[in-house]
Image 1: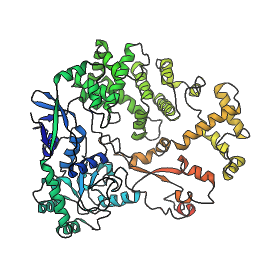
Image 2: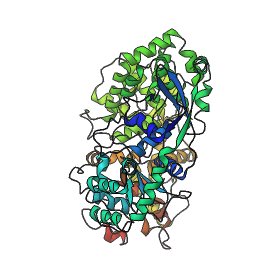
Image 3: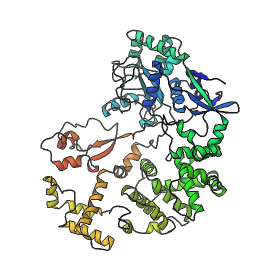
Image 4: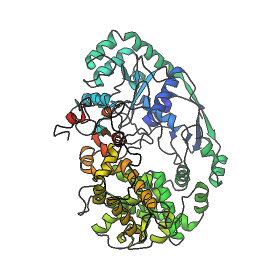
Length: 625
């Protein structure tokens, strides 16, 4: 058994996985490093810094990598050449277009504490991050310039998250070259040949000062000749670096599986990206049923992480075994106790292997999308559903469990009420899901019941009051309310109990079937206004036609943890005309960063719409309005 590995050998575990002696075991989770961590690792390697050892377990004639996946994959990405179509590359845990590592051979600006300027381009950031702050995305203007370049490629006609990695490059850079070009070449002439052969004709960077690939090649042969030679030699020096390794004794692994507290998996990850409880539970389950891995990973349709799928499935089975009772989130110790119960173990296995769980998830996601609902105009954007599922796991579990135990005909009207209730619960802070579960999950008519009784349920739980839009508009159109905003009155966001304010108080009283004092009504009003001011999900829902048409390829990209939404949040009334303006009304400043002044807009459209002009002039053209 080798106790050290060269970088090329480490990269080959994924570059040529069919022949590799090292595999990723079922207990490992996906690739979770951010681009900054990849760039920083390569900076450390080139500087000769130690990057730690690898930890293996032995199984037959293979080695399973127990600790070091993030480093191994980052090393692999540096060696990965996307232009080489003949390789047998099979990344362990990254789907779709793989990130590309670039080395800038001459840079004046670098991240703090870095000696070399490495650049990583990804599907969601095909132009890379900022040179000086490699965890910060590029400014809109720089992304726009990069996008204009990328769109010169004949294949780049859709959204930029669908661009091939061979058609993009880091924009906030000087003279970047794919690291794999240098690693694969025998001399600098070969590097230049690869640049000339493979990089797109429109290759140009923010700081390089060259207009296209031909001019860049000319610079590599002349002014940049010494810098290319120096960087080439430095990269070649790392060929001999040996990374140490250790093997875990099988006795330790056996003890770990029997233990109620799997300390090993926590300890070996304590210095990296920490494993969560769901990660550990998923690791345990994959070790027991390795064949379940692919089944589980296909269930979520990219909306739901595999760890979350198993967590939800475990609670469904546990609820089935306890008469539909609410089961709180299962921790590692509880899971290990339950998995020893044959009924729980077989129930979980049946849910996964018979695809009952997948059918349940498919049904839930289709209902949430409203795409086949004739009563709904359009389709709920996937990003809203993703956000709901990830941020409201308890609500989603309640929803799929209700579907699981209640067999009734679901009309379009019922489905629309489901979506309305669930999003209202999520967006207006429903608390105490355990109470909702135990009282309502067996109720076949739950979705037909009005929301009224769930407004400040039990006087302390449930959601905030929802005010009819027409009544709210009528309230704000009153001259004395409008005047409070003009004069920046301290209580302008509260509920005034005269005029239409009295109607709103009466509305609250009617809903709760009791007379409410102004103090209580004002609290309800203030909480509701706070939610509709800042919840951006409301904007996405209202812009659903635009979101679905413009960002059709955007779903969820969990392959590498750098994903930002591919739209910009644009101030309709420019912020330049609000901040640092002495005579700007305070209520306009309040409003400027609320939903009323935002729109989601594509990078392509978010050009310079004359932000320096007065809002009146800027918003006059019909296309902008």
